[in-house]
Length: 326
Image (cartoon, rainbow, N blue to C red; front, top):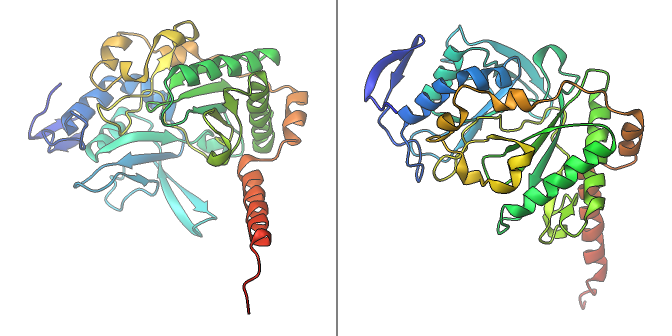
């Protein structure tokens, strides 16, 4: 891949410092990042398009940071959407990465990771996918999340749904289930919880929906919280990890034979050739069964359940402390 020192212009973007290291232990340069994203632009732009985009950047030797609000120097040709953020009580100007030029501009800003929302900007009240994020313990081998992925696939099949799977680019897996617009955001969230619970019950020795890490033991966490305004690393997005792995689509029949390290900034293009496996694997949008939604409505949201459990445990610890002598 090219690593020119600077001065190059590509797709109307002036590129700089292409020969600088991307980040520590990356084994890559900024030019490598630009070249990779340019090469996969026809696959990743459709995944990012018309979705509020958060990126993780690495600049000036600083720790990586997530950027939601675009900087003031953002070119006027980068499409942006103002969104009121209730948590921070401010308007956030999100970028829409709808074309190759915008993608290359982000790459030149040293944006390594691309995290779009799970709703399109024209229907922020409707999720486009049910997403199950399989998060294994830090010391787990990859066969653990793979085994749980098969449980999720079975849980989906049991209710007539199908999904596509990709590596997270870290140590886990992401399963996407495209859905139509009939379900509200709350209903989609409920269905996600129901599928996660069903997968857990298929083999509770290896899968868990426990939100608190202390309750997971050595099990794989089936994370059902990627809903609403949540984001997920996009298919084909690089990740800020040693060797720069990328989040990569995998055929279900190949899942038992692969490792996350098989897909990196340096070899993903060769693996893709002229195809787009993520688009090819994605089922058509499906309607969520009403009984699955009803089932999920009876399951508390993970963060809320964890909050109440944390308070309960705190009260228990306080009540068990003997009074001090006066």
